[in-house]
Length: 208
Image (tube, rainbow, N blue to C red; front, side):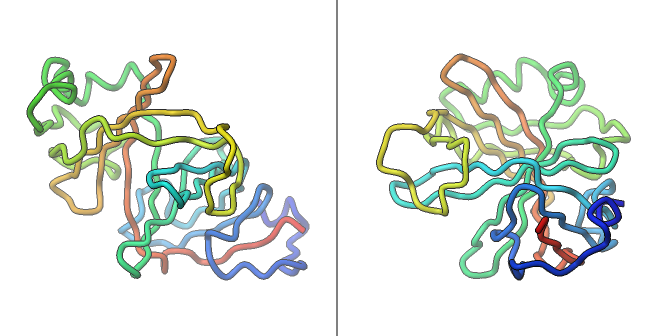
């Protein structure tokens, strides 16, 4: 267990009351809740990196990279949701899995003129709790910047952000989304996204 690695010490100079306060080395533990993807239920994860996405001129959405005890990587941010915050978990879809889930021609229409609906062809067991049955595109060629550090929620004045474009699709299950990010070098990341209430958090421990 991660808390044993850190000696089981739950005290520290920083009091963690919100997930946005987490820093590299901190631990977050989750309850057994059905709203969570299966492999996150009851688990403890360590924060290994902090970055941020800029979707507006002034604000940055903090993103935490989390590592599980079996060395899997997850991403976590907090969606304000009009004052009722939600945790936004995501995993990057392996390229070899993409067209197992989606029809290739249908997927390519994300870049077309019309907003499209993607149907999931099959649900591999390891991804079933992350997936909806279909996804409807609601954002096409959105613009954003990624910052490879904790910016404290405010966009820096210098030009250090990495530009990207993105498509966003909403699942027929409200809490499941699909995100497609296209980076400046042409690399494309496809992520499965799960939204959960903040009360799925069991506890948070600072690294020091």
